[in-house]
Length: 562
Image 1 (tube, rainbow, N blue to C red):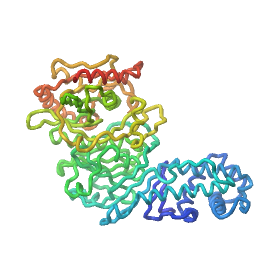
Image 2 (tube, rainbow, N blue to C red):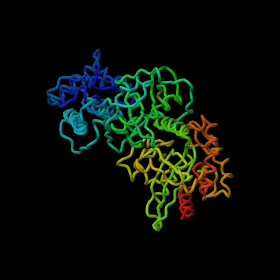
Image 3 (cartoon, one colour):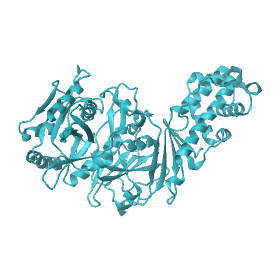
Image 4 (cartoon, helix red, strand yellow):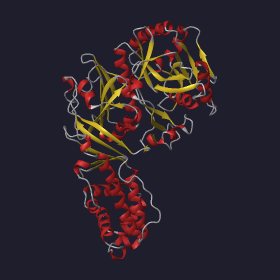
């Protein structure tokens, strides 16, 4: 069994510590290559397998392919003595099929670093570059031997990996009750070969996270061969996300959306959140627990194939964040915020609130894209989840959580995803339902600072109206926001007109009583602070909406705040 290569579903993990092929012959003689060929045979179409069996009666198909590969590496085509050579066209196709089978995997390399070694001393970027070069060279050597000549057209595809990470054990300030998590392997560096195209087996999120009243991770036994930890800064909070390696591409996608915590952060800051993701306990749990003793929120998601969808990892992190923030007396906002800076020196802080598919991220993209000659620049503060707090002056201020955005391709201006294509992570981009992209949006300092709120608008995606409606009295608006009404668009398991408490099923729904008290406090503060409260009509749930609808809404907002 290969210790270097791990295959599961469409994920491949290459452990450079267990062996690094520096020559073609090393690949040919490796357990990893044998594992790949075995997996290919097990998953090949029936016609291919039947044809191989007809050419290789009674022979082991894996061993025969390995033997052919070795002969192609050493000899010229006319010197090879192998039954498959009788059908050279089939051999050419077989080589291409195996190569494509390998490239269809989402491939990530890992390097384990010692406690005291510096990342700079192990140049994993060079090592990963070498691996890509070696794999491409290996394929071309075999393919051109079968072809009988050199190629006329060369395509420099990513033949090795799509991403790479370094891992190391790090000192941290987890309480003693979580000593089972203290010696985890933390992601130290991430290399993304972007644009990164991922194909998770599921395309939407189902169900809600349930609050439980017994710690779900106290008995978790951490295996550092199976779990990696991404230390994330969610706004001003520190979260440790321990995920099973089968979900490594969800884990490293966090790098595009949550600021990674540094070694110094881990040494000096007690974690606010701890999550175990992909626990093989035979259950279907998606639960969180409010650990008041240790002033932490912890969560466990049992191993399920559907967890490949990035929304599960992102949303459990934000659920824990929201609960932790409510514990501190702050109000979670499922929405998005921009600071619009005008050329005359004035600034407006605009917050949009709404559940999944309401258009909060999309309208921010449109506002940023529209700009205008009166606007100097626009800063995105948060794109999905933020928090309101009341400062010492009694003003309502907001903070963000994420440095990136996880948005639907369908709802964006067609050019927008490609403007940041070189830094983007696409998820099922060819899908007609809920194709997504993760794009970097802002910097951590901006996200984690306080920002004055001037306008607070509910994202109404179900009415066919155009523009913005402001409420005459702030108190009038409370029912609209609490009702959480929207037209579901297939981004979750819901469809049609739905209602969700405070448009936020990620903490406020589970702790409604606590959240209602906070809403009352903050609505009074909104009134006292003279914040303009209303709703903006995004039209995203309207069946016959035009492509201009979202632009019209963004334009109306810009006109309002001038």
